[in-house]
Length: 135
Image (cartoon, rainbow, N blue to C red; front, side):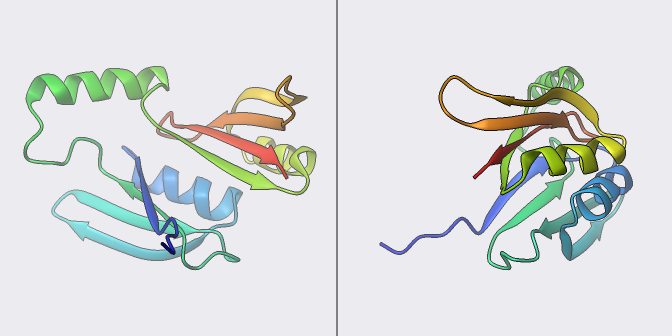
């Protein structure tokens, strides 16, 4: 099989703040921006990978989700434990400095992990964990 990661989804409860983070701080391209009522889906992705995108979506927008499930999702997002993405760069220290200067909440400064990866971590405006690995 010849499979690629095409889209992945992250919840975004403040579309403007998430857009500013992924576009202005991380430097991602905006590939699509679709509104429906008071909801908004924003598709972003790294310029060098046009086939791979992240869709920033309204959390719990699925009509099949119960009110209890919506409350659970909101609680997990508030704790920063609902969703995550792992990005990669050739210079994690430089990426850390840029993202930190952009005002992101730092979770972990760059460090060498015992399993062989050097990485750092932030939370995006919705509380999603954003890890950046050095490759």
